[in-house]
Picture 1 (cartoon, rainbow, N blue to C red):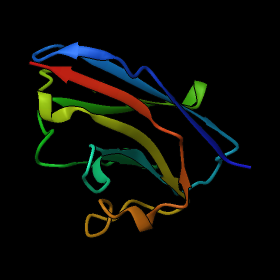
Picture 2 (picture 1 turned 180 degrees about the vertical axis):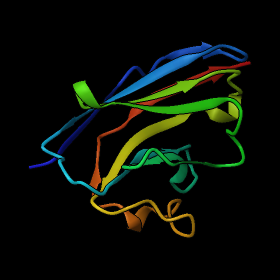
Picture 3 (picture 1 turned 90 degrees about the horizontal axis):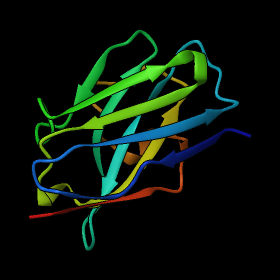
Picture 4 (picture 1 turned 90 degrees about the vertical axis):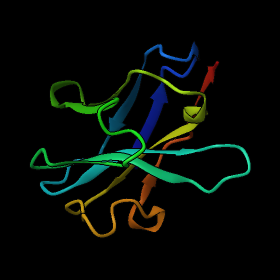
Length: 126
């Protein structure tokens, strides 16, 4: 059974930084797409960033230049470095994964992903 477990959620000041981790278990596919979504109160879950098995990354316009996604393959961990945080980044952040290459056309859609973590809360205050 594939498991995705997020950690690192916390409270931060606007302009600050937070790093999230997603521990990935039993997800071993030569082709895959894994990344981060977020859901703010009263809003739909939205794609933040993903990384494909070949290292290709995709970012939502709202986080480009501020957030960076990386993979630690040795430790099977997905990381999200969030810098220059804004109050609008406040949300529950979810790790998501699917055993196929990321699609530039569909990567932001929640129904593209088979596996999800439970989420971790990030709160940014002004």
